[in-house]
Length: 147
Image (tube, rainbow, N blue to C red; front, side, top):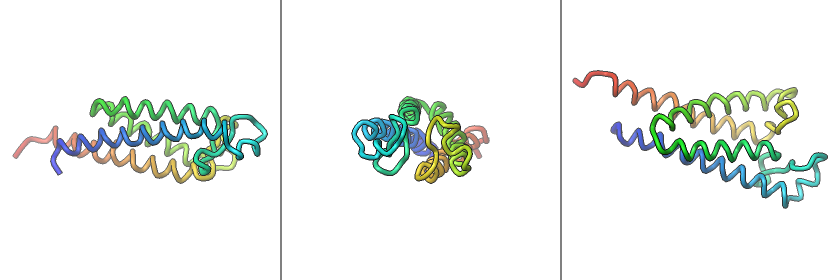
């Protein structure tokens, strides 16, 4: 694979992750407004996005902002790499917090448990690959002398 196609892949991966996060954030707000799951929670705004992912208003807002950031990061290689790296670190930490009983609601602000754990691991892995592994190979090709 040539360098130009690797750059395009990194940028499009940021776009795809951004669109997925934006969609899930919007789906969470829709679920909070219309879902039968919302009635089961003692606090308003809690529900299951797509019937799978526990969420609340704050979690949905974070998803929308992250999605918009990924879409904006698509416009440049540096922005895409920065997005992937930050996303991998934050969502990797989020997955670990979701596994711990005393932090699985991020100290009462948003649900990180259930299907959110495996989804965070999946997205952290994808963004780690594009942010650290693929971008590292591009950097090495740009820095190393041509033979």
